[in-house]
Amino acid sequence: MDYQIQITESLQRVATVSADSEIEAIELVRRLYKEEKIVLDSEDFTDANFIVKNQNLKTYYQSEKRDFVLAHGDSFKLLKEFDFKFDMIFADPPYFLSNGGISLQSGKVVCVNKGNWDKGKSQDDVMAFNMEWLRLCRDKLKDNGTIWISGTYHNIFSVANCLTELGYKILNVITWQKTNPPANISCRFFTYSTEFVIWARKMQKVPHKFNYDLMKELNDGKQMTDVWRMPAIGRWEKTCDKHPTQKPLRLLVRMILASTNQDDWILDPFSGSSTTGIAANLCGRRFAGLEQEEEFCKLSKARREEMENLENYNNLISHIEDLHKLQDCSMVNEDISGNIQIPF
Image (tube, rainbow, N blue to C red; front, top):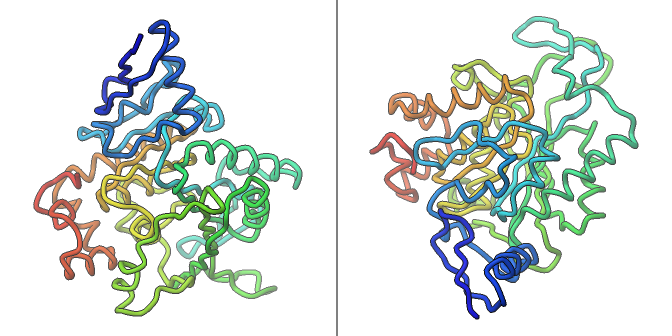
């Protein structure tokens, strides 16, 4: 007998399979989907509800238009609770630097202690940590999907080794050159002014998305290089408070524009204050974030709700040069140009 299985109530497309019973048909569809023999695209879904397949995974927050959904909990556990394949993943994993050192912030000497989640680990522990989350994330990428991972020299080499071992193909290592780096208060080495972002695709031989022409357009008609000069976060990005390792919206916007298309789904397994989600919505993409610290979930919710105000939304757009250039070239839809409150 043939059974038509609608995988979740928010899925538009219907899959037909042959089975002896409805239960067997459901299990067959699940297996085929997990094996990627049933491939679903972003347009197959009407909203974000499809992400949750298990009652144990509760949505902490979702936007009114369901283009921004956030779950609270341990990412390692949450990543096992849903099967959806994403177009892109961005991850800013712990650097394990909270060891009691000192740094300079806003002209003040402060202790480097971001939280228990960033406490130092042994090299073996760091390697095991990176191997596990990258393995889980690889299972969440479409075959043509890509992943971006930010870091410093403290962690990025471990990440690169794990990517290679797991079968990813590294495409670029972007150097983010900060135009306003913090001062070197020890004067015992060169001033740290860069961070790195590895860009890799899931499969060795499956082509990935890369909006080459768009990147060239944003770079005044010249090829975009792997060195991006951008400032660290500004005051306009801290209106709801800030995360200790918050990345600038400009940086995330460029990654998203480079490697995704309108309405694509983006995952961030270490969501923090959800800069990835804010950038995704500004670019007309959809976002799912995982975050274990509730204080950062609250911050994420506040940041996303702030965007519901048209003035706040336009203020964010006004600070991001890449989005300005898109408007000037009429290369984005009406949502981005500010005609409506919600980007999507």
